[in-house]
Image (cartoon, rainbow, N blue to C red; front, side, top):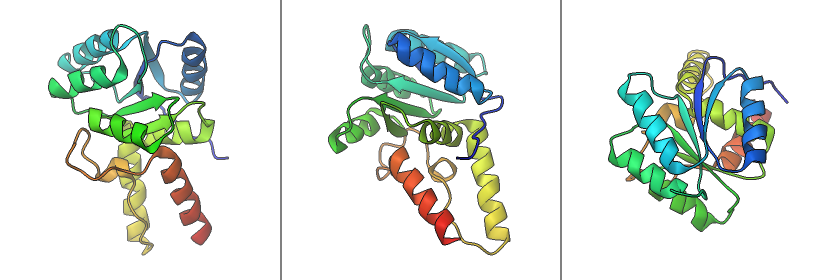
Length: 185
């Protein structure tokens, strides 16, 4: 398994579970990301909008969908309603296709289920962060320049918060597609 880096990435983690907070912060900090933690959606909305209005937005928001005070669905809708266009990835224990659809409809850009697979989690976090999006675009440009036509990552082609867009593949589906592409190369 390759080492995924999130160097310099500023991530807001909205998660109420202490064990999940510790695990996710550990994984992200080990990948060189800086993490701010909020225990509920309301605190997450305040932190995200404050950072955005200061001109120093988070590169990525990881949003637990089941939290006290304000859940992740309402928090994401509130952020999108305020014009926040940054990347938001849902974290949820609910793995049904209708749950994924509900997260995307709320304004999330992607969806990951708990328990988290470390490699898929870090790859997804990197891809949806601003730094990850730039790296994905550079990677696609290099592949295209070399004559290999690989499909661009969702981070390179999606408009965060674009509710009219087709649902994007989940992080698990993207990982499987990347593995298939690597095997075919």
